[in-house]
Image (cartoon, rainbow, N blue to C red; front, side, top):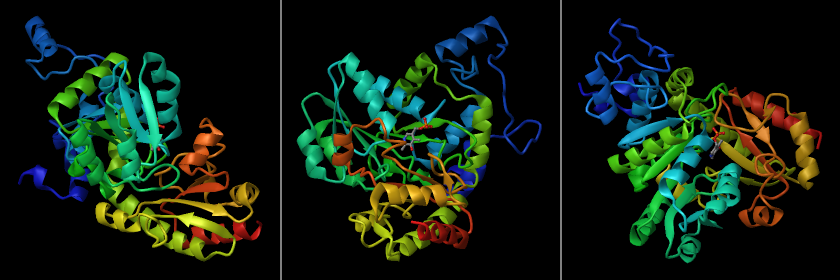
Amino acid sequence: MDKKDLKFDSKLIHGGGYKNKLGAVNVPIYQSSTFEFETADEGARCFNGESEGYIYTRLGNPTIKVLERTVADLEKGFGAIATSSGMGAVSTVYMALLSKGDHIVSSDAVYGPSRGLMEDHFSRFGVESTYVDTSDIESIKKAIKKNTKILYIEKPSNPTISITDLKACSELAKQHGLLLVVDNTFSSPYLQRPIEFGADVVFHSVTKFINGHADVVGGIIIAKTEALYKKLRSMMIAMGCNMDPHQAYLVIRGLKTLSIRVERAQQNAEKIAHYLEKHPKIEWIKYPGLKSHPQHELAKKQMDGFGAMISFGVKGGLNAGKILMDNVQVAILAVSLGGVETLIEHPASMTHSKVSAEEKKKAGISDELVRYAVGIEHVDDLIADLEQALAKV
Ligand SMILES: *Cc1c(COP(=O)(O)O)cnc(C)c1O
């Protein structure tokens, strides 16, 4: 039986094609910085690419390789490159694919630090960027210039939970000769595989759903083609933002339960979204599974589920939201998402605090927006928790 034909859930467990010579069922942690060559000639072959032997962990490592193979397979890419963090993945992508004088069109509700890295640092090297509402294809079209090289999509966006039409973006990218790069952190490959829609490069903060246990910071980049894979891997090696073998081991362990974690978290999220939508103290709510979400139909079409991220505003604005955040007892007041535990945070003053007030307004990151990242606790406890905290508002 060809393991390539396994279903997604089975690939999570048996992916990576690792077979241990001693029969260990789990992938060992190869905690070694460097690897012995059989002979001097073999060492030379490893370096010139004729042999696939391991050399030095920054360049590649057997434990990390298992994670990379598994995720590349899940995302339907040619290959994957694990990185020290999600931002390690973002910086590798920017560095590998952009040069002086290039321009990138990006989502205006992109992860704050991804935008900060571009605006504060890549701008110093002559890279230009424009931020638009990527859920509106017309505004992407208007932003494309002669020197545009990348169309950068994050979906669902953070923290506004807007959905971008990947197929339309991929067609647009092809027309203009752009690379389509997708930050797929919020969906995880369980809900969406952007390469199937024509993306060239996909990446994740594995800190979130892929690892799922709030005990690792890490990233991974998946390239559609061999040429892109080689370009990205050599940049990751040059910048030295490799994952560590122990980190990779934990991520491999977390990844095994991705399907059942995301499944439970999104079931919880749907129930919580319906509860909040009817709550008299909730001003508005955004969740792709609700009919009121502006891209509900698109989400239904291009995703295998609606995910576990909800954003909402409490009546009474920021102060009311703060009372809620200070009074939840099951949900934890912390940034991040995609873990087994439910987290609540305030993007305007936390994850997106570096984004200017004007840009926040444009991107729809209002002052009252509360981001609720649903975990896998019993949903009755989460709803009871919100109920008691909202009663104090
Ligand atoms: C967390 C996150 C990142 C950055 O990843 P780190 O692992 O924290 O470096 C990038 N994009 C999105 C959408 C994220 O949520």
